[in-house]
Image 1: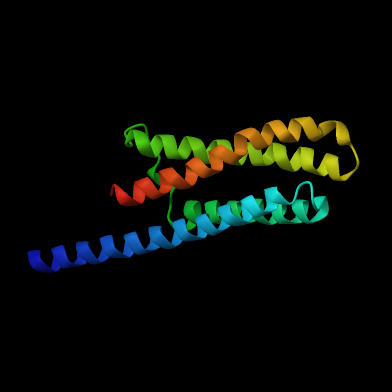
Image 2: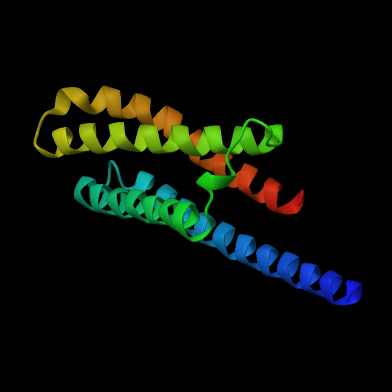
Length: 144
């Protein structure tokens, strides 16, 4: 019976590793589209807005999947390892900056160009936060 439980635990660890790998691959692809969208901001502002909207939606869908599908919120506690707390802080901060990016992005699309400087400031925060979110997610997968 003990051998069966060891094999079952190993199967679940491999299954969790594969799921984490797929999630990180999806996150990496979203980040690639994120950088592509950023590159369009001066060349094609309309396409930039559509691409970044798609990126934000994809990231939020991924987060919803983690929260609902993997019960990520039920595992949050102060007794978590510090690197997990750091990862959650980066991810939450990214989402908060996404909210501001949406608000100011809509205003800019409506012609209120005075908000461009605020959007540049948001970009200075959200870009490194999004990269750090992926890096810490990969570290969490490797350190399991």
